[in-house]
Amino acid sequence: MDNDGGNANTTQFYDYSSYYYEDLLPNFAPCSNKDLRNFGMVFLPTIYSLVFVLGFIGNGLVVCVLLKHRNQTNLTDICLFNLAVADLLFVFTLPFYSHYLVVDQWTFGDFMCRFVSGSHTTGFFSSTFFMVAMTLDRYMVILHTRAVARYRTPMAAITLSVIVWMLSLCVSLPTLIFTKVTNESSGQACGYVPENKAWLLYNMFSVNILGLLIPLLVMICCYSMIIPVMMKLRSGKKHRVVKMIICIVVAFFLFWTPYNISLFLIFLKSEGKLQSSCSMEQNLKLSATVTETIAYTHCCLNPIIYGFMGHKFRKRALQLLRKLVPLIHFTSYFSDSTYRESSVTSRSSDVTSNFIM
Image 1 (spheres, rainbow, N blue to C red):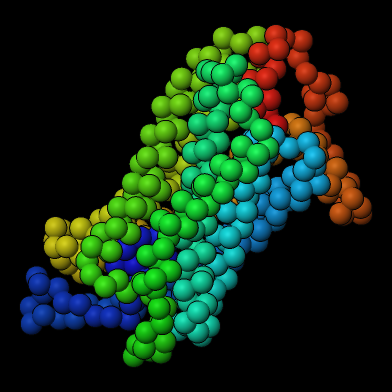
Image 2 (image 1 turned 180 degrees about the vertical axis):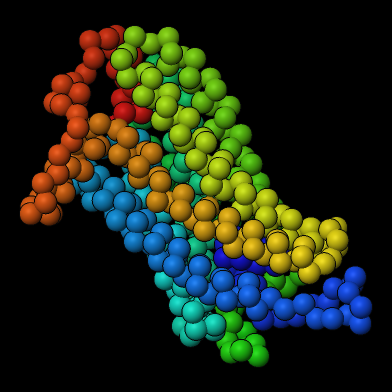
């Protein structure tokens, strides 16, 4: 959630009702955030609710499909399953924050304050880390196919998943420890209250570096080497695979970068590195509010990019939907021949199967 000099996952809300003074105004006339606060109380809960519904349906369908075909899973399927679980954990927290914004106080107690905040942060980092893991796996499969073939077992995938979840939990521990309920003038608030400035800096740079810069660099480096190899293959699916790669990188960059930039600028403002003014304060908070909603919708795109763009997965999803909702006729615009393997070399088939699930 928004915070002053914090990050996307510390759930420290802006005090929209606070007043601050514009140095350039005569007699230090107070500047009010009332309009911005009213905007946030309507805009954010609406978007949060929409993201929750779409994210729950999309990621829930991914989980159901992979569980139904769990006997046919591979490392890619297991990573995709964990990515969907991470996104579900993330969207699970949004209704609590919607309620928090609407009633303007935290009513769920200290335990839920810590639990929801920790789940929010863990879901964010685990989702990002699993995208990185899937990127590295694809890089190894395509550029070092024979060397890694024997290691891509279900047990290896489970081990990798445990490591990613443990890493995400460790990175999120400060949120679990320092988030608590505090008494404010308007009632109880749930916020990140670190013991010292070092933990505030940790949260800022963990989200920007571990949550954006490193994953983005890994994706760009790996996929820049994968695309030339894919273009040399004789598989008819290579163009669709390249489009999928571009979608993954571009979506991650466009959805998360603006929010991280907004949070970093707010951090600089809190450190006195930027000019203090009413317009500056309001513009930064407004940009954080808007870009936050854009960033959070990325979890709704993951099932589309990683799951539904794959023919095999889409076919399984349609079969499951026909059983769950028999009154609605689900059709696919792809013929059965679309799902047949191309008559290409075995290496080409193995490579594309890791993208087109």
